[in-house]
Length: 78
Image (cartoon, rainbow, N blue to C red; front, side, top):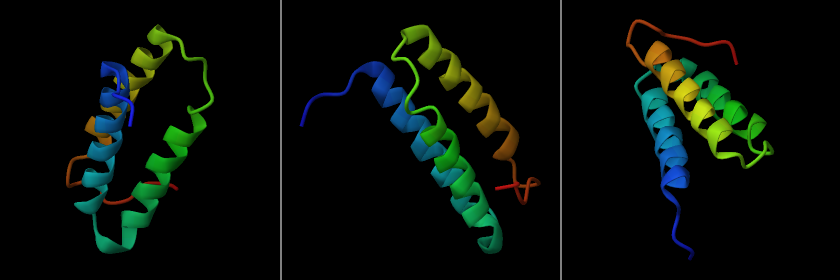
């Protein structure tokens, strides 16, 4: 298996953090958080492999995670 670049590791790390945060949500709402995460990552999968675009999307994803991660956020529109 090829070694991952730093940027690839950052993307995978963010994806894992999002799925871990979904596990802390109420059981009935977990599928909504997981579907939202998968949809957001899949939507950006075919973008240009431009370094600055990927960095921007990483920052945007981290900010979204900070918004949806707190325990008082109980559901998300999937």
